[in-house]
Amino acid sequence: MSANLPGMVTRKNYQRLLHVGSWTVFLILSVFIFSNFWPLNIAILKAVSNGSLFILVFYLNLSVLIPYFYTKKRYVLYIMASIGLFGVFTSLRIFFREYFFGLPSVVGMPERPLQSEFLIVSSFLFVFGISIFVKLIQNHVDSVERNREIIRQRDEAEFRMLKAQVNPHFLFNTLNNLYTLAYTGSEKTPGAIMSLSEIMRYLIYEAGAQLVPLEKEIRFLTNYVELEKLRIEDTSKVTFRIDQPSENSMIAPLVFIAFVENAFKHSNIDTDPEGFVQIFLSFGESEIYFTCENSMPTSTIPKKEGGTGLANARARLDLMYPGKAALRINSTNLVYSVTLKISI
Image (cartoon, rainbow, N blue to C red):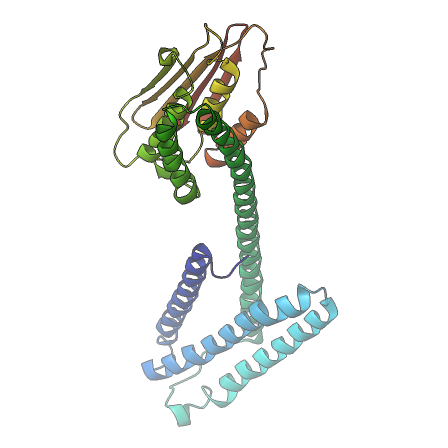
């Protein structure tokens, strides 16, 4: 997991602030408690000296002993290092008690309150245990972040793969149609080239984003439908109706094109007198409603799920709108219909 991720940087800064704040509160409370037995200046010195030992124990165990010994299953070395740390901590605490704060003639302390070795040992075990607990929490959070990053990278890779499958298939069909128009010398060729130009511009400069303005996706669909209509004599067999979307609405690119492309491909609209394609796009307050229907020639065997293009479209919806896209496909001997609701 990259250390440069914005989320990770924010979490590290939050951890630092939490540590600094916690130790600051600890030192302030220590001064308050010690001031009941010593003058304020001595209480501050005692709080700082004890606090420094606690901080030493806490971070040595958190950042050195656990990562370098316990995590690497060097349990004997970890136990020995912990015992050594305990010895250093205890010796310094006794030294401060007996030879520094325990000399009232030197520091002006009226009298020293009773401090037992039990309190020294228990304070060490408390700080040592807290450091272990904090390390366990850090490991858990790191594991969660790492799993999220793995899932994110996997989803992005899968999304790029699906787009790579969609775009060549779409371009192949479009160029094939344009070739047919040019070969027959159709007057519709310039319009087809213009539509294709806008489509290519969208695919190259827009469709690589996670989200695009809804108006641009609509323009892309409009160009595609217009390109398909250029090869159809009776354009009344194509119904393409789109409501005005809300301003600043965003959508994942290329979520509809597979269904539209499939409709024109399987309707045989250019040769079947009864062929038709109907496309509707409307918008609620936070929903997008898409419907696409096409005729089913009698020679076509209905398929519930469709081919690779529709499978890719379904997979992309699952990636971009998990739990927010309701797709329903129905097929009869006469009509193939797709209805899609997306919550945005």
